[in-house]
Length: 284
Image (cartoon, rainbow, N blue to C red; front, side, top):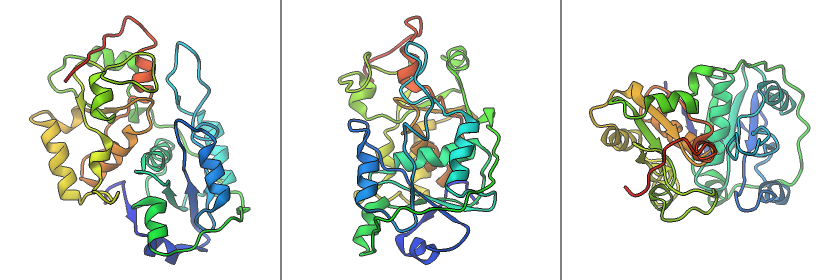
């Protein structure tokens, strides 16, 4: 069974109230950091706790060194997960209200800490829940603290130094999850330098979804990533994006497609450009 698993709104509704369920609302907006918590307080899936991208799921930014969303300290993340009730045997369901990038980022963080089963994304997110006519709640749950104690898995990561050494390698398949205009360097709304890491391919994460915001079937995702990879080995895949968030959507989709879990360059473009010695490219 792949590490990536999906639930429908009906399947999630059947699980509400189960003792082993941990439900996390991961809504966020890069241009309005307060949006997620504000929206959560206005209404969320019953029993959901709010997981804030910047307060809970990222570490502190070090100017000129890190990207926009550094990895959180594992000990601190473990504590937050325990606060939300996480235990080793918990069933965790993650959702947001967009294309799923913030939920997928939380999914990857749980994998990074060693949680390998019982992890789900709500397919279609909160939009699908609402369209199914299911209720929202404004009450904030008070979960019984859990005892989860994960260990960070360095094998799921590639850092800037490692990636620099691999640039130009015939087997490297570096997938950039940003939209094509940002990849090309035509626009850059978030970072001070536009472009992409040399040798990367544009693999916009939104292409993992159909027109209604649901993940494509596994066979279509497999065809998408097979075409991007070409003759290079699956072991050569590396995912990145602007700050290590939307790349996790590609990692989730790769897993749905039956690929082994590829490493993440967590610092991504916003970290890459902090060192002017690192090469950049523009265009296709």
